Image (cartoon, rainbow, N blue to C red; front, side):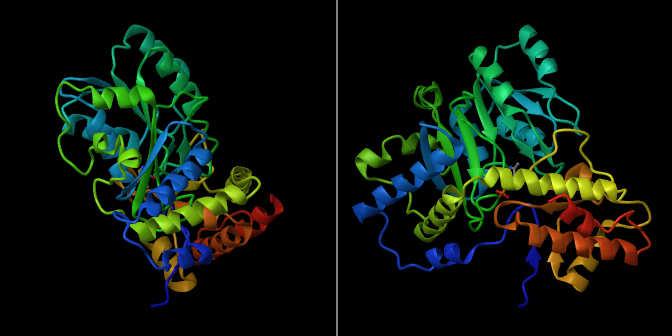
Length: 377
Ligand SMILES: *Cc1c(COP(=O)(O)O)cnc(C)c1O
């Protein structure tokens, strides 16, 4: 099969070094004690990436498992949980909150803008009786990055445990988990770290552990129960057999990220040049502010449909770009510039193809998108 060039906001292209790591011979991860050290070292690398000294775990399941595990483990029936919502993932957290018996109280913010911290501050000054709050670092469908630094500091002032879905931001946006007092940071393997889909990783602060280990009501379920993990290293015991090959891959991907001088600056630069070229071409971006470093969301121009763009990108150029889901279905196209896809040559080819596809259907960008992009690099 001639695999397309994937320029989607996850999964992303996997570097050959990571593919080679995946192919290494395995050991028995439950019985070979050296694997416990390997797993711990891999966690330490992830801790460096998100700048935390808190515990880190890698779980077998994509990013969504991290979201569910945080809610399953932290929420007790009747808990009031603040759901900070300016997009599809932010809103979706509310469903997990309710599923585990919490009362979801939504703080809603404009879906085309980053969360308004001033408004949140006002809201919290009137009502801050929450055991925890959920929020999203980068709203991947809309391409918006939220100021989690200010939000989490604010939550911390009110003694609220913060759970941040940073799945599509880790590695592409600045993240200082400890300095910003984030209790749980949730990540996934397939976005900016460019490992294959299949793993989630998450950090847990002492305050979050305390809540998890001192519940009135036991945690429902097994796979999403973080309490099982408390002493995995001391006891040399995992709750289930670890996906050792995937962990080999994730570790190599994390090492690649750590050895680069400034991967976040690379994401910033590419994202900015992509936006400028698209806007100069007369296309409209979905966000009004809070533009993401990792994904660009473009409103579909008049006189052309999502399927025409998507199919023609694929058929004529073998490039896969994404649409979105929920209320954004068929309204936007998304270009992922995450991790291994966040390089000038790849984004250039994508914009060149997009430019040609649009012209084929009579939509004429005011400048050649790819040339404008390069001029801003
Ligand atoms: C990709 C993503 C997830 C996880 O989704 P998976 O399909 O499990 O990889 C969660 N939150 C955000 C914001 C994401 O972009």
